[in-house]
Image 1 (tube, rainbow, N blue to C red):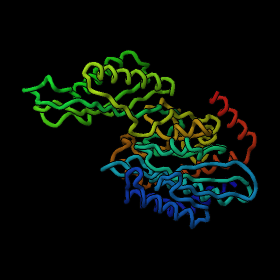
Image 2: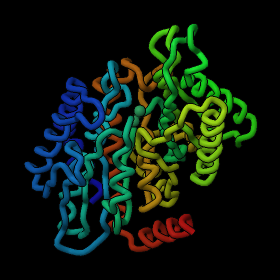
Image 3: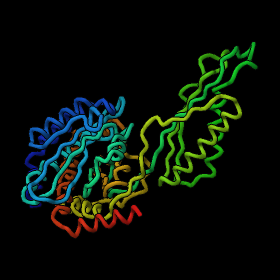
Amino acid sequence: MKDLIIKTISGRLDEFFKLSTWLYEHPELGEKEYQAAALLSDFFEAEGFAVERGIYGFETAFRASCGGHKPGPHIALFCEYDALPQIGHGCGHNLISAMSVGAAVALKEILEEMGGTITVFGTPAEETNGIKGILAEKGAFDGFTAAMMAHPNVITEESGTSLALCALKFEFIGKAAHAAAMPEKGINALDAVILLFNGVNALRQHVPSDVRIHGIITDGGVAPNIVPDYGAAKFYLRAKGKDTLASVIEKVTNCAQGAEAMTGAACKISRFENAYDNLRTNQTLSERFTSNLKILGEEKVHRASEGIGSIDIGNVSHVVPVIHPWIGMGNGELVIHTKEFADCTITDQGKEVLYKGACALALTAYDVMESEDLQRKIKEEFIYFCQ
Ligand SMILES: [Zn+2]
Ligand SMILES: [Zn+2]
């Protein structure tokens, strides 16, 4: 059965690589991935998957399912296909899509005999609005046995952790006045923003070392001779766990309220992007993936490092057992989120990542389908985590 999986993927590798290259040539930003979602949905439809487009109100999200006639585990794979402004596929999401396509196509071949269901989710805006988080919240992954994807990177590394993230926007409403002639009539919204930054900077000394707080001023007045009546800032707050993040959100909110009290500029706080939860890797599943990668000839699989970014599969990992391993390419000097990284996805090295990722995903899914004992261990670990 494992041979059949590998044979299917190697036999159709050029086709999957062509799909990835097409996505590279047609990069689209988060929630605007109309062509990518259409291409992938059409592909799955032609392969005999049941495809639903525009799921949960997201125009560029889709779900493609294929079930055997026998009961069995329900496994989710993810396609990501959003690109970065000006850089294109500098995060290699074109390869992510192609890897999940390859894995799903190979698994379809064995579903009849193995039983169970494979569902590929097309999930927009990983780089910005984290649509997986909303899908998780709406119950899209309820009842799944496991959810998997693989991400290109500069080294091959086990699935690890990522930081929980909250995106906060602070707006201050002041009062305009002539800044020289009648300053006493004004309320300075820019001062409120600056005081917020000063408060946050004082707070830095007193938060755990995994906390990251970084912000920009988006509005700070229109002319020096007018007291700014509107000021705004956007912040990303991050921490390893949701509880720490909640306390940081509270403290930064207090800073904003302090700035409001000091200046009299009314403060409005909102979330400008969806929140990302921290990633909790299912180690049982991760070990299977790593061992399959090694069988495929990947010599060095680095141990998981401390995640310092935030990814929207983090939210999924709180409702279903998840892995998000990394597969490396480049000569050691490659940097992710660059044009060079995007270019590497369409080289032979990119093709190799696609081959290894698609095979390892499908082989791992097969391991889960084949062993009730493995299914039980994955579930037990997940339940233990949730307690
Ligand atoms: Zn990225
Ligand atoms: Zn990415």
